[in-house]
Length: 119
Image (cartoon, rainbow, N blue to C red):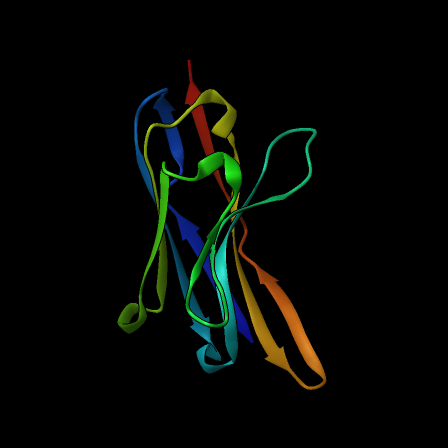
């Protein structure tokens, strides 16, 4: 089992910054990829940023150049540095891990952390 716990959300003014953290516990060795998604009210969940299985990074188009994903393997933690925040970045941000299971892969989600950007 893998557990993901996010932290770092909150209220920030447009143009400001926040850093989100996601700590993974449990069967860490089974993690194949890990990253961040978000879901705004009335919208579908979308990719924000992720580390792929090969170790490279991938970003959603709307956050490129503003957000940076990083990780500390010693702490089993993935971070999301969010700069130049816009009101449209308001959403619940979810940490995601793709884990290897018998027969393929499975997705694990954190509980989410709310980011609110005021104009």
